[in-house]
Length: 364
Image (cartoon, rainbow, N blue to C red; front, side, top):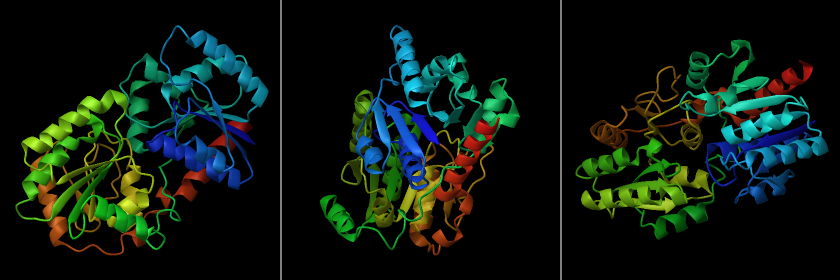
């Protein structure tokens, strides 16, 4: 089977990491895996794992160049003769759908978030099967678009339990990272994700400021890169930390490749996202490393976070609530979180269910 995944670029983020993981697992199972994107730092990982990367501009939103790109993409599809076309973002989905109209290769889309309902976003419902990464996303598209519920499948993001294993972390990296950012003997509160307003790092920084009185050794660790168009926002966050007098307590560590080690050195992970279409990859990965999680929630979400068991739920945009839950984690004790991780949220389950969707489309 030849599977072609299409996404804008291969730098960092949940979509990108999921693509890399599926590529690796497809190759292990004897599939021919092709990834089409504009490129990025994860291209070498795609190729190292045995997949093929084809550099193609499925990122630009410029409508003037779209017709030419559609024609070239159609020619590329004819050359590849794929069994499955799998678009994982809106621009790639539009280009793929237009290029594939005369070819009619099986077409799958994955809806990763709660995008604003409009014609542009509607393309993600045009797949022969539509995968959503959580129940809130499924309910969102069924509410706002005329899509057959029978072709929608929920597949949760899965964690690779081999990669996120507390017995396999790089202890040397952890020691070096702690020394570099002065985290020795500190209570490390971590948030992982790109620098974007959706992650609500403002609330995170304010909560660190509020909690520092009762937790003198507290440090807020923000792990995630800032794209060029988010540099001003990064500056605003740094200024906020300065105004609140916690510049020395907030560490902007940038993008990191050894995420398992980041969870392992953290005392608690915070996910303060304003929109949650699923449980969130960072939450499940932290659990796999036996790290408690403080997280927001969303209507229709089946929460994995249980108060006092593996972390706490918080209200959105409420620094006082977050600060209080940080104090509770600091005072509490959490054990055997990994042992109770629901198998539905593992990489193995995600891969098998994705392959099941592919087989459905091929039979149809």
